[in-house]
Length: 55
Image (spheres, rainbow, N blue to C red):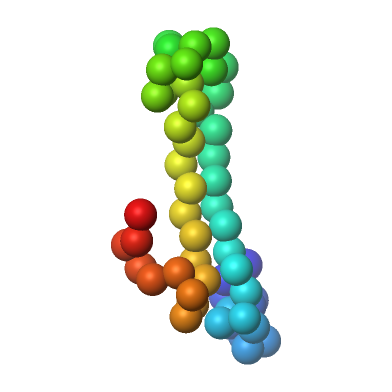
């Protein structure tokens, strides 16, 4: 997808968000309020607006 956006010159005009889910079958998944039950991965690419490695 990123290569296609770059090929048409729209990569720098596009907010890209990638997230995931840890799933229910894993131990200590979403059945509680611990951090492992509520936190999931998130990666954002937004050239000129979201600096690299910012948390």
